[in-house]
Image (cartoon, rainbow, N blue to C red; front, side, top):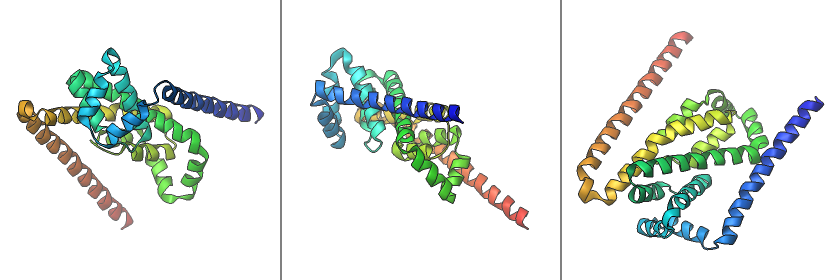
Length: 241
């Protein structure tokens, strides 16, 4: 028992230490560049794509690191739109590298957000799950596959998916795996669509094909899910009879 209590205290202390390091890093950046956060906030809030692209390019060869950091912060916060930074990455670095940068940055952001929620609200989350039948079911059925499906939906609010995952008992590794797999198609779609909308004159045909293909795929997934749910409901009725 004493060994277990020591392990729990040590784990809690380690997590809080990492959280303190993260906070100090964010504060340190503000002290070094006081205009960084206000500028990023304003450009993102106002959906100023041209301003964001110009701001990133002003960093020269460091633009990729600044873009990565901005994308991470946006996904940690959870309620700021990431579509603009994804579009900017596609226009600045090209579709392939823009997708890779945005994918890794968004995954890093949601994973950090998940971890922070677990550290700060772990006890509260456990009590909520124990007291709520709905959250108990959520805790029982949550898996990396469910996270992957949720993350794969384009323009899905990251904060909502992260909060639901953090309230479950899902292991960190499963959330990481689900986020990595699910984020790739959604980010690729955001980068491509955003890039082609801005350059509509050059890529109108490709944009049309992408929209049609995506609509067919997601429509088929929705239809399959609805059919599977209906079959499950009918099977439950048969069992009750």
